[in-house]
Image (cartoon, rainbow, N blue to C red; front, top):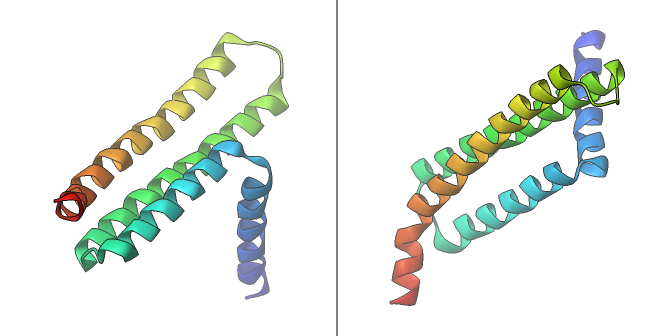
Length: 119
């Protein structure tokens, strides 16, 4: 049980490191804060909350994985290496895909609320 609980400590430490040192993670956290604030403001439905939270978790998790891959590659070499560049670009592409779809989902969910607000 102690090892299990220590695992949570390591995970929270990793999240803390992301918050302290990773600009892109901070940007995603800011976007999450904006979307959550909008969700409370517009009183989105439970289903919409689930979608928003799920896609947000996906973006944050992929950003964390991307950062871990980058750090691991940097242990191998910090010099320009074509395979390392390819690996990093692919991992960054995964984050971009999820962020693009998160943006589209936000538009789909919040469009009706914004249209009501401005009309």
